[in-house]
Image (cartoon, rainbow, N blue to C red; front, side, top):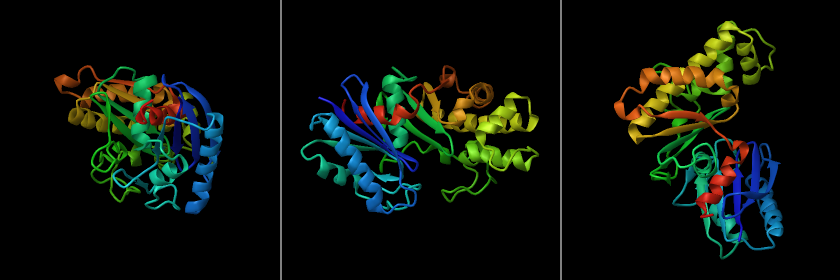
Length: 301
């Protein structure tokens, strides 16, 4: 029997079918309706569920959902910052009504990414893992003692909002100096422009990385600054949760050594406790499929 898995974000909605070993035997992706109403976004999800069920022969053993947050796990609702039409949207109950009699598990996209990497990706076998996505924002999720850790409300692992600069920039969360305001792609670019990086108006993190590879000093400093902020955050979270592994994916992480080399170097300055001596930071392996794989695992695949 197959597990139906969903990964819902502000840019795309993905659906898949996973076998008991975690292999995705079917996947489909559609863009999230930009500025869509609650029903318009739901209609896309419902259509993708119907298509997946048809591929599965009409029956699945369970459903796992990875959703952008914040989420309310006890209530089964989601209020994604990047899906404005969904505010306390009863996602778990809506899905359960479409697939009656089948258990439905809801989780944040960060914890599902971490769980997917821990099951089938770069974190195989790790007991205490932080999974991170460094892209237009900085998201994360925790697997502790081999199990997903969701916290009281389902939002544990929002590491992008660990404060690393006391007098830093205002963040979308309402705080100041969050690691997201230093290390996320748009913020890397913003800092580089303010410090003399010359590039076309539509240039983003990819172009910044290309400039850094070509030896542009400002671009290199931007990546070093972002990597140092990430190292500060990772050291703090690792000390609190006694981590043994950090897996990082997302668009900025695709810059490879531009991010990972200064990050690992800075981590030696901040992760000084003896029990953190073996902490490893590695690139993610599953890419865009991590959320689906993690959602399937969450559902019990």
